[in-house]
Each structure stands twice: as structure tokens, then as C-alpha cells.
Amino acid sequence: MESTRFYDERPEPRRIVVVIDDAESARAALGWAMHNVIRSGDIITLLHVHPSSGRGEERIKDFVPVQLQSAEGNRRLHRLKGFQLALSFKDLCDINPEAKVEIVVAEGDQGPTIVSLTKKLGATALIMGQHKRCLLGRILGKKDTPAYCIKNSDCLVLAVQQRSGRIGLNANKKTASEVRIVKYL
Image 1 (cartoon, one colour):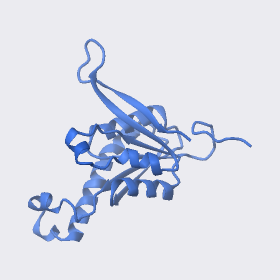
Image 2 (cartoon, rainbow, N blue to C red):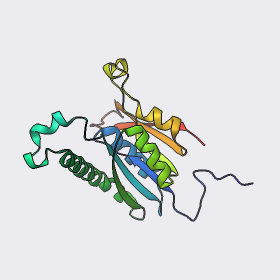
Image 3 (cartoon, rainbow, N blue to C red):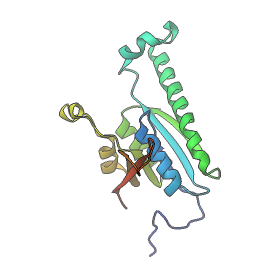
Image 4 (cartoon, rainbow, N blue to C red):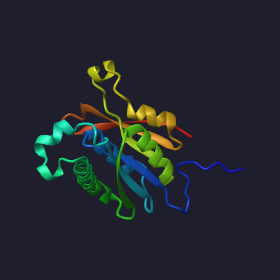
């Protein structure tokens, strides 16, 4: 019986799900994936998950027009911001013009929503930026989305963590990305 590996040459396209958010580590993860994992014919799914509209409403209420201050209006606003964010990431995908790009914006808890959508989409791999959690977040027990995805995902999970150090002698704002394979099938 032959084993199918992630990097085997297969005629059918692979579906690579890249989780995006407004953090620089997500941009680094997509950039790394475009250069190292994604090849011609692959399907790239840019996935953005925003929290349920019940959370965070008081923070954005001052910035939302009155007609959008309902729960449905908040959902629309979050979806719109999610699609705008995904479109800004889509430009990075132009490195490989033969890869097909899809955008999915979903609502819910990040970990469970990401895992259920990767299963539903039949993803070959899940690539996500690895944020450094602040001390307060660790003390308060803030959820670690990559850890949840590692434990519950059926596909290969790659976490890309952007290092903050400079590269080379005369490096103006260049940073390196460190990749950790956190789940291997």
C-alpha cells in the first residue's frame, strides 16, 4: 500500500488553508507558504474568522453609523472588514498566478471554526501565523488557537512565527520567518 505524503506529485490540486488576521505573523505565514509550499494548480483558501457579534460590540459602537448598530449590522461590518483584510492578503498570492485563490470569512470561536472549516473544505494543509502571547494573556488563560488546531485538525498544520531580529549587517527592517511543523501526518 502506497503512502500519500504532503509533497508527493499528484495531478489533483491540493487545498491549502491559510488563516489570516490583522497581525504581521499572518502575512509572514502566507508569504512563507507562497515561496515554500504552494505550487501551480493548488487552491489557496484565505480564511478569516471574526468573533461572534455578541463580543466586542461596545468597542466598535462609537465608530459605526446608527443604522448598523444592530446585531445584523455588526455581522455585516465584521464580514466586510474580513473581506477587505482578505483582499489585502490576496496581493501576496500573485507570486503564483496559476494557483486559485478563494476567500472565506466566518463567524465564531477561532479554534473550533477553523478546524470545522478545514475538515469541511477537505484541506491538505493548514498554515497559520504563530503569535507570541503576552504575559497577561497567558496568566488570564487566553485561548491558544494554534494549539487547539494542532490537537483537533485532521490535516498537516504549519505554524509560522515571525522573528523580530534583523538579518545581515545592513538590513533595513528585514525579518526572518521561523517555521515550526507542529503536526505531521
